[in-house]
Length: 320
Image 1 (spheres, rainbow, N blue to C red):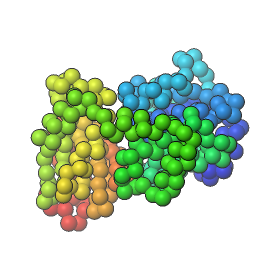
Image 2: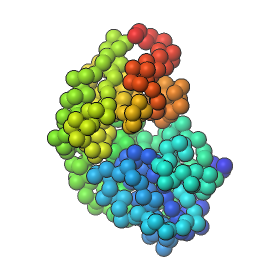
Image 3: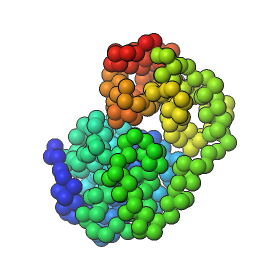
Image 4: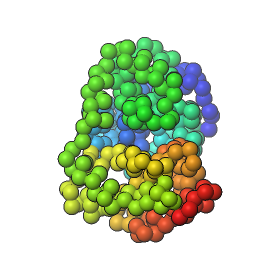
């Protein structure tokens, strides 16, 4: 399991052909944008490259993925993953590749180095930053690559508003904009447009929110019953985890999304007081210091109690 530099990775990719690129379960803009940008970059080098279809795509991510989707009969010679910290985040159709990833590119501190070769930069705000550096080492960044990478970088930084955003993040974004991409549409779709059902979801989550630790911890829940009552789709529920952190005084926002009966996906967004990754690692998850997740199979009350206990164990001044 070799660890690579950016230049090592670029050289390795030059030797690849017939490449299949994997994205993670419940794909966000970063994994999709990285995969699409890499695929476009490999094709610009004359390589055959495709993305493994992902059943979790939403209306906002589908347009960037669709032009590169593999046919069911595509047989790869090389497999690359983008923005995936662990094989536990592989979609079901990617599980056959769990033991044979040739190159894994990621930016999560909890990255498990599951690839034969690995490139990880935990200091990067988005995996899209890492992919930009790799693709720039391979040749000119085309508008097709740049648009996908802008989706990756902008979505993983909350349109450059999250604390993980750095000077390098802005420098990458500026370089991408100089290619002439339609960044305005990306910003409109991902950050300034909500469906009516999405707004109803947010209203229900906020009205049912629970607060702990002198109201510094907020828990917002999205049970299956709420999704059914509003007839909401995955597109309506995209990036709900950012909502709790907008509440004044809250420095630890937990969004509990029920995936199946009594199976809860917890998304934790924190300030400096709470290390989200350390909390989620206690429950089998991981991520970044300020944004992490885990999955708990238990009734809602038990799942809530377990995440609160994990926080209390790690945060000295936590008062439940």
